[in-house]
Image 1: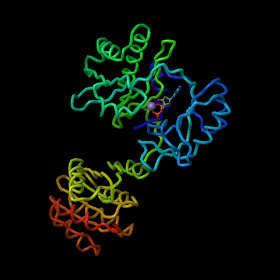
Image 2: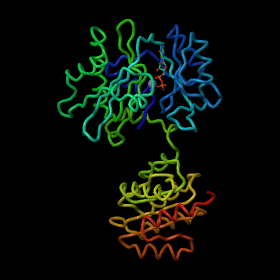
Image 3: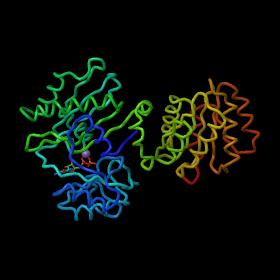
Image 4: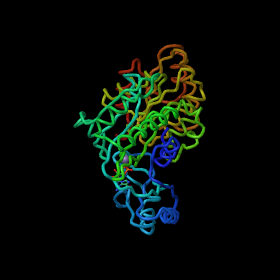
Length: 394
Ligand code: GDP
Ligand code: MN
């Protein structure tokens, strides 16, 4: 689960990580009031679940999702240009994201910008802390072009973050004296916040130093492990459904593992591994999957019906591929679910079906006798190829 910058900062600040003073606003008038209370120069920051806001452009033509405002009047003006508008950044995709709130913070006097991030390294089975003196800019670019400028330490899950590791990172960033001390304290708190909140990602870009010798988290991004939210009610309550894909929200209500993608072939598969393989084979056959969907090993007719309905409501879908390997789930149950969905919604698109395993003949029989026009395939390669060729309006 993702949260907004202001929410991530509130969590980090509870652990003592220094952040600029600020408050979230839902209207230009509120932005004005907050800016007036803070006094002096403030920053007006669009709150969306995506980065790259500073360099982003609004569909209205207005440039910049993060703006420095000289006074409260200017803050109100910037807020009115951001609120309700669609912001496009390199992370939102061309469709952009609507700004529903802005974060008003005191402006910091930046000496230098750094990058600091914590993420799980699955290959090494431990958290990796990454730091770079090339902060502020896109860290992906630094990683691709000058990877030697990113320093990493891996934290042992039982031993935790060690002092020598903090020193290693601090020295790598060129810190000494008071700034080094501030950085050490910040990193210790940041790591604690990350671990205790079951975050999968904590990213500070930029982490800044100031002339007064302070180290501050100027931006913050946190993602949380969905499977751990049950033990973090406070974090779970920060969920902002308006930031999520409506179809994914609908799918999560039915406990379906559905992730929307930008292709045209809707897939319904049982098992995450088979779903990944199906997406690969579709790609090899020259198509593009519209989604990842794992209906699960214990799919019921109701579940399959909902899954089918959800994947069909994606307007980009031009054909459907149902790929089931019946192990625990029975193929006839899948067929019944598809037919139940077909009763409620008229299927106008070509549907390719491959059923293998438990009760596959029975499932195929049900589909054949349904009066619906399903295209059947024997194996995955054939199924993918048929689904690619069958696409309507391509
Ligand atoms: P992002 O573009 O979505 O990553 O948003 P950030 O919060 O990182 O802000 C983008 C950029 O705006 C930062 O890299 C800074 O250069 C600049 N910025 C943000 N806050 C301040 C501030 O308080 N003072 C100054 N001088 N610049 C800021
Ligand atoms: Mn940033």
